[in-house]
Length: 346
Image 1 (cartoon, rainbow, N blue to C red):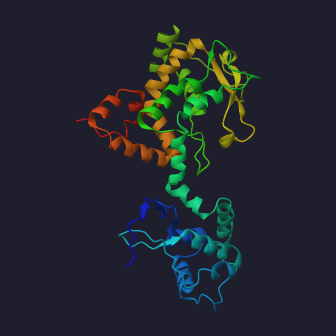
Image 2: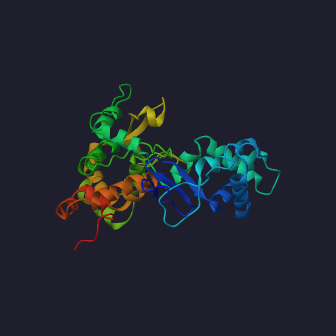
Image 3: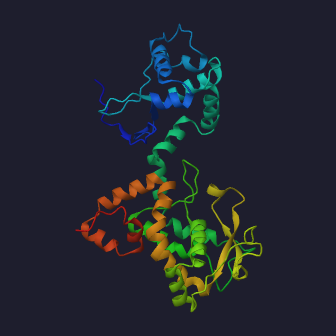
């Protein structure tokens, strides 16, 4: 009997996708593969049986399926539930068959569209995006980088054609205190881009939009904050000109653009992007908004949607901390961010 104890499953989602640790080999259950191919589950079961029972040399399988004849089609894991999880490369071959070799059927267009989309990155990367898996080598590479946010600030402010002007601040640099704490205190680096899904993670644009919406709100709490920090409860409107606001917001003229430089790895060669900067008189109220509203109420869900595996790793890190450390951490910006991940206070 084969010892499969070295393999375990990264939890999949409701769609039936799974990834195996520690090597990242992936797969999906029969119903998920059937949905991907636009056929009934029974058709996939029959196809799998045909491939499994075919002679490795003498068979009439299509070319995309021949190399799997008579071979193990299941993803081998230590899964005690006995789920039939089909290897990613087999899934790729079966999807190719239904997209190009099978006779015309009702769901054929589904198979064709899915094959084209998945072929760009490969079936394994597609399933990684579903399971949130990040290979250990990539995780190790991230750990080696060290002081990531220190380097990113230097890069962000490196443009000399249209730099950040004196007397102004940008959202990105002001939030660095928070993200540097995440890195230093709990070892979590919020990357510019998810290496698997391609989604941008850093919420600088999101923070700016939320801050602007909050500043012009007529609600009582923003009004009181404006009164305290700016000396007037009057709404502040930084909106750009648009069909809804043809001349832009009343305070739009106070904003200056600067060139924010992003990493080439995440944004390509055209990586210097025009971004907003605000007069320093708004810095204190921005810090107030960031610490009292954005970090506690919005930031965790924003990043969790874009880096679910990173947040899962963060939860594991927190679970291993001594109780004294957790209590001390709860009073920091990081504690406000991860309070939904911390166990209830006793």
